[in-house]
Length: 378
Image (cartoon, rainbow, N blue to C red; front, side, top):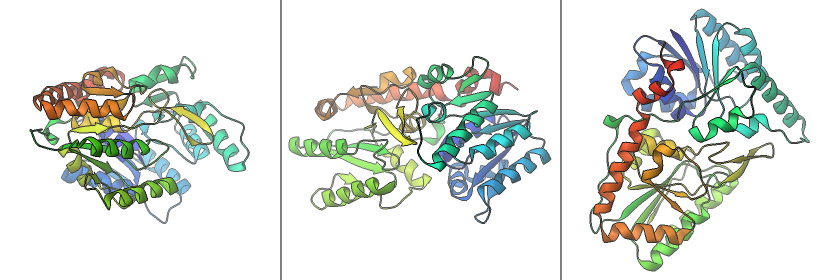
């Protein structure tokens, strides 16, 4: 089968889609932008040449690239088009779908409410975007969400005849990871992964935990593994620099992106992934999303990919496959008490990392394909 995959932003989320469709028989074409293509090169290495790449030139408009996609889809006889992220130009993508009536199209919805709940808007741009989203949703017959906890929430908002799949934002490839060891007298390495974005994660919790660790002399190192977003992100970065003048247990990156090789290196080396997630957030158009219900934390896919134990707010929903390698907390004191157990008895970490490994096995390419036979059996 000839497969087309479109992704311009969430390159890390498109990687598992590409691998899942890569069964040795499918011919795969990926439509993407330059920044994402750079990261795809890191992710695939030499095997990137297995696929056909249509990369938007910087001089091309987004609408021109959509028109170019249409021509390439027709020329290559693409039978299934997977739109992994559509976040703008909704009217244009709606027209594209209308023009591809005979092609099977699946669209991933990352933020359910943003597409299906609309507040009264005040600006012309918001009205245009809202109209485009409605038409886009109307035209698409099959959707995907990246977390099992989102499936029923999307189904309830769609007509019964529309399908909802669940292709996760990561697949587990054991041969590509390193399982971290933890020994007595070693510092506990914790990562908060992803762009520094106060809409998604509460970085005040990070500084609170560090202060409490310092107060009880708990040997912890926290890494903020990502660039920064917006003015609030700049403020967090400034606080990191100020904190680091007197402390050496916080690592961060002064830039807008962390390339994939560095990201993977750090992830392989850490003991815990910490998700100081907000629960309710507003990302666009004054629409509230609920993490774990209408939107999923991308950090959960870092956990899956790297088979890491993780620390998470008690209110955050996530796939039950991951429960046994998680620690759910109410406040920073809970985290302190939890981490002290590993300092007292490092062997506890050996047990925990085995659970994390077993949990990630639920997300191997074979297991994800088996749960989605209507997508991957042809």
